[in-house]
Image (cartoon, rainbow, N blue to C red):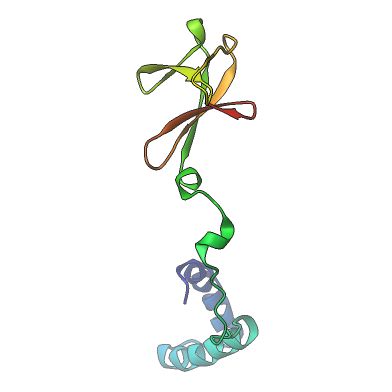
Length: 126
């Protein structure tokens, strides 16, 4: 039985016992077996164990480093810098040219699972 179901059963079973006029422990123990069978017949579905529903991860084409990244929000400071983890960072494009961002603009900081840090400004990553 799933843990999250246990709370539901704890609330429901006393009511069901009253409806079935059960008032002693031996009768309750016999009754619970039938209750669980009826519950399982109504709500449990069988799994086809002959099929493998797992898909190789490569098929998803998702960069796991970014999938496991953490995201933060920062504002651009004077000199077009961004402060993150007590360090000031400047933004550079892929060719190495400094990119100036407007002061007080909201920038998304992405820290990847491997520790790389990127600034996301609109659709651009720096």
